[in-house]
Amino acid sequence: MKKLITTLLFLAQCLLPLICLLVLHHFSLSRTIQQMESGTFGQTDAQVYLSKNSPQVHQNLWHTLSNKQTDLAVYLDDTTSAEHTIRYMMYTGDYVTLPMQDGRFFTTEDFKENHPVAVVGKKIKGIYSRDGKKYLNVKGYTYRVIGTVGYEDDSDFDHYIFINLLDCKNTDLQVYTFDFFSKKKSGILQDCKKHLKKENCKMELMVKEENFQETLAVSPLTTGFLVTLILCGFLCILLLTSQWIGIMRKDMGIRRLLGATGKQLTRRLMAVYSSMLAMSLLAGSFCCHFYTAADFNLYLKIHGLLALVMLFYAYGLSTRESRIPITEVIKQ
Amino acid sequence: MFITLDHIQVSYKTKAGHIHALKDISMEIREGEFLTIMGKSGCGKSTLLNVLGTILRPTEGHYHFQEEDILHLNDASLAGFRNKNIGFIVQNFALLPDETVYKNVALPLHYQKVGRSTRQKKVRSILKQMGLFSQRHKYPYELSGGQQQRVAIARALVTEPKLLLADEPTGALDEETGTAIMEILRQINEEGTTIVMVTHDKDFAEYGSRCLTMKDGDLVS
Image 1 (cartoon, each protein chain N blue to C red):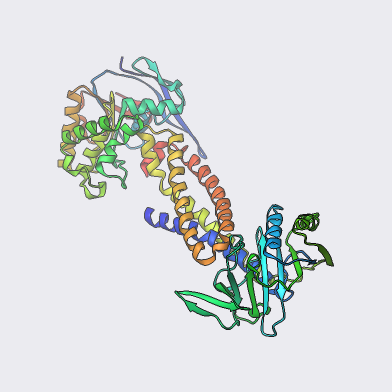
Image 2: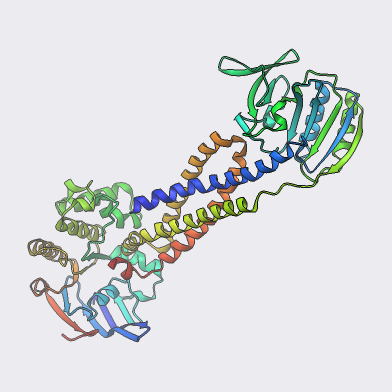
């Protein structure tokens, strides 16, 4: 029985953070899918004109924006082709979770010079394989395809090619879109303007920032179902924890009979419980890495929060158990 | 005097009212004695043994162990005292089912914070004494009742306690095995360990140098 309860508890500890992650992923994805129609995802955006389009300007922009410690993205769209849109982009902080058919979307580590990587929509043609990797030629330049955006239904991004802005070879484009994800945006454009002057690049605001209405709401039924799922999972872990500690009762009683103090036993129990949580973190991290590596930080936060609650609960139970009279426990 | 109990009382509060498990017990135990306690079920024998073993605090009274009033000790100190001075043998053996014979016997030394090599020496010695050395890697469920009780005795003796408490040590064993266990206890007593044993069996009670009878929470003889 002890092995069964321990195994179930371990599995529940592995699964619950992943379920939470999947639920958050679902909510975020639902919102993202609806926002894909407009092409921007942030709370506000601004279109600016830069007099110069060069790798140095882009580098300068990247360094300026990286230091702002805010979440924003910069796009440079090439809509000259009727078949597809090329979006040269970069972002700082966290970006939205786009629905991926395979591979991955950009991470901030992809935004560097001489790193020709691309993410393509599911309907983009011309992708070829070489040495086990995928490639695409765009306007005479070769980019390695690291992921494909798309989900079951059609979306505007099916015809997009996303390219690392710091590897942009197209110097004709000059209208940039700044997509702000947080309200903390005051002075950012002014700072960029100041820094770009060093590159002899002028910056002009073309379109004033607009506030977007959040029109998307996830269906209440789905929300209710998912929240109930999480609550059930959580209650399940609490119940299994109670069972697990209850099974340890006789073990603890015998140890107290032989001279262990309540504190020593609580410490021992918490050490075993913590090691189970640590192993579940490893197992869950492994799964998270394969499913959605970009959400790893979020997974760690969720697991950490749940682990904290569970540790407090286990501590309370084990302290209570260590106070049960030895005579009662030994007789069981 | 080795052990003195002065006006020990143990009572419990229940929905039906107060239950006096021990009414007013005063007794002395000499060092090296083999004391047996008999009486009907519910008369308070095990409660008395639990008080002697410091796993139950009396409601009233004093308990002197080698002239020291030990009821003034807090729970943590009492646990340390119990580990060092008292060994327990109970009817259902009270072995850890998920640990080997070796680890079960070594457990009290772990709480004494004895070094690994000393622990190893003591455990090996006591296992050989009990004829259990070849079983040291086995788990309790792989042993017979008699063997399990011998493991429990080995565990009780590994810390070289001054007092050994046995609560119906032969209760779960057949007559032959029970007799073998009693012979082991007799030998332990002859080597100088004070033993207090609770039993229902009159034949086994005669192993003791003195026999007390209890009735309704009182010592009657």
